[in-house]
Length: 286
Length: 349
Image (cartoon, rainbow over the protein chains, first blue to last red):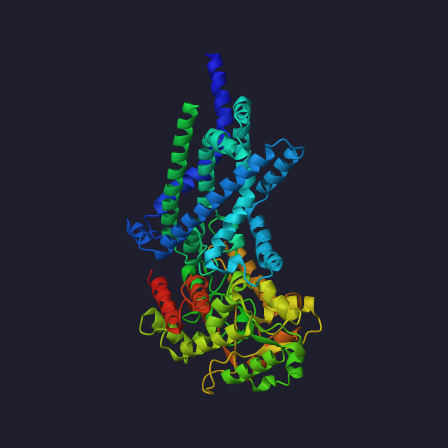
């Protein structure tokens, strides 16, 4: 009896503070937000809030800019997921080779992940605008054209997240039994065959994890978006998160922005749920 | 405001915000500084004769030109009151690029940290030069007027063409720092900006001699082509829901800023403001402020009208439309139609 009381106390003692914080800053605003999405709320305190039913939800699907933002986000996510995973995997291969600088390189590649996206965006903006054109001796730059601006953003995201994903791949590669690699070496496999037939299939679980991690971060990106392009040119790089803020704070259409945020939540939650489902399934198989 | 810890003094940008926050605005009509405010500076925060805000200051913008370069090029700025004379001046500067040591004629921007140069300040010109700007806005709101087909807006596209032609080869990446910095460093001869840039200009080149040119829309002398837009960027308001003694203190403070000598000194010298009150006799401390006062003494001013546009019109609709027009994705007709469409959508919600 006494022991179970103590256990309960410890349990709530640890859980309590974060549960309270979570309730105050996540749960309550979330529920209030859902309520606001059915009203004509305009963020002025004291003004009467009218219940308008599903009007906002109807409008949201007639908003061409939201559809554009979703399309941009999908395109960007495609670039980002592809680049981050490719680079991350290549870096992982590099730093698992037997060389002296492997540990140092791991740290170096991981470091950009420790810098905030906002700062990264400003640094890279400078690079894209002033340095890159100078190196390649061109007048053009990637940020001024709609077709390349999203790729530029994906490059920055790769620089930031590539090292993080690399760590996941490194762990997976190191988990490969060395006898398998030795056996293939004895059979006369060259390094490409080695990668293709041994390493690649065996890091597949890590690939699933990284895939969803990058997909989710690509969907939710906001900081790099603001500092690198801020939606320019012609709103072609305005991704969903930024679109929601435009709706709410520029058009002062808070209720409509709230509906978009809920829609956004549903999409991101679905992606995350699929991720959890697949990772769990893999774990069982292994 | 939403934090639950409401301020006693807060700022309101213009009539759209005024209407939104009207429940919080304490009437200030019987304050001593109201009588001393310059004509027109209180209009935006006045409803039925009741004044709700104190103007921060007066600001103005136009085409800031490098006086020495114009002299060297033999251009008399006094004569630039029409679109064709402006074009002639730009063409001459373009021809003399090497002699003057400039890279481009005009520092303009439509993106980045200076997007408002085009999407707020430039777009204000065709609004402000309507015969009756506020009536025009009213008509836009009740859908009896459109921007496409309007003579001022048609002329405005010509002015934009002129800017695009004589400004940077790629306008899509020009930040505020590029824009103002290039002008201060003598890389450009003309800058589309306002008197708030004086701090940065002085910092880079204290000897720079500058003044304002107007933005003419055409050659018609009946249009206010020789004028520059002048307005009040922000107003101080007192929170109606604060306690009585706090409200009294807030009013006293606002009056102190406007009426006392120290307040005046602070506004003029510390902030480089042009005060909106006639009792302040201090001479403006910088050339751009002096140039603005020159225009306003002659009555060559038009108002700032963008405060009357629906929320999101400038920073979303106009910005995108101008960028599309610049990139050649839309022609003049489509450009103005995009503005109309955006206006209708935003004002009807």
